[in-house]
Length: 354
Image 1 (tube, rainbow, N blue to C red):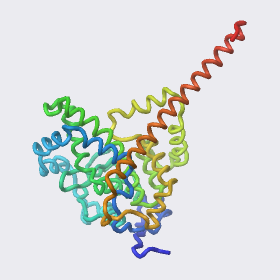
Image 2: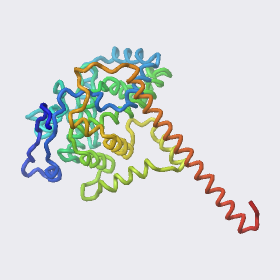
Image 3: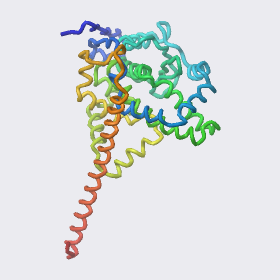
Image 4: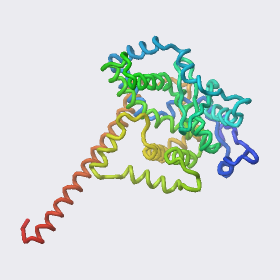
């Protein structure tokens, strides 16, 4: 049975658009997720990390100082000074794609979108009280229509999840830390480290929102492959990328497990191969299909109890911790068995006994 709020957002393929040839094969009806709450897609680890962040005694104080020092308008000018605002007259194709994303996720308002001349394939959602999206021109050049919509939906997901203020503060803190600004003392550096941990978790939530914006997993995998490798479609293979993601996730070497953690320290984003694995796990859990079937939290529903929210988040962190410990234990056992086997082999060759 088709729900009452089902609407088609099927987009005709622009004639002669070279970037839309692959997208045209995937043109499909997308469900408008009327009144969807961001809790429907938020990763429990995102909420857990944000809660932990807010328990830091000086967290609010640091943010208030930064907010008061910079203010809303200077922040907007700093991010938008070297960019072009998207409209039906400027970057009309991107404007149309963005409007479709806003409609699919039933965004309460049309957040301003800007394009900046930057070759890096990236985008971001920024602001304090008035959020906006900044899209790099490199993404517009490299990604096809559906992939670009995934990126736009990802950023809208950040806004709808209330991530924007903290993400903006993180960018400012990083910039100040790099310049040795006096406000970034030891206390603020602690906030910076905590913000980075949450920031990485928030990407997992936004990836889910991005998928809901395009409603085609392979589009998301393809976009992540392009952003990770930067190559042309005829040079890359999505299936091989998924195999790489599984191989990374299943690595049981102890040194590899440790370096997986160390490599993320100081990084703002999880690795793309990890994000692919996390997204596939969410899809396989059935939550994605349930949302498309209309089974999702709505904004007008009462918020779940604080204890329930923390319980879900704690379960996610406990699962991650157990998996990491299990990986280390398995790697240690393999190293032990390998060492014993080598010793036995060496002993037998030299006449020694065990």
